[in-house]
Length: 104
Image (cartoon, rainbow, N blue to C red; front, side, top):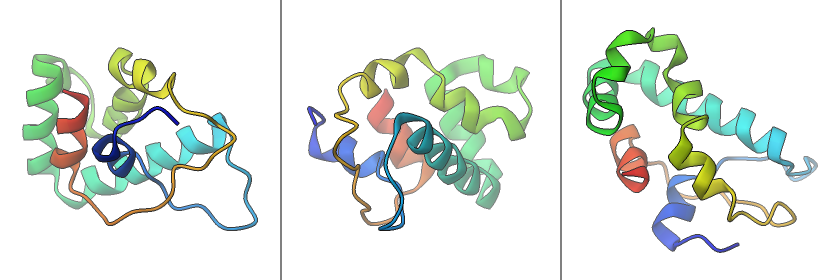
């Protein structure tokens, strides 16, 4: 897979046993995961987004932050190391800040 254990943990998503992991499926699941974390604590999300993306976060609506994270240059560089034949297995839940720290 080529990802460090902390990064693999941060980027893990839940997938049903019958679902096939593809890049499109993964990106959709990751976007959903990040959106849930952002919506759960918008104050923490703003702090984390400002830390990673600086002022850019203030120019986008909260509803677009998950997509902004997933489409970021850093995330695309990280995901280029993923072997899509293997699943990013589920791990314990992390906060948005912990996930974004892995991207910094």
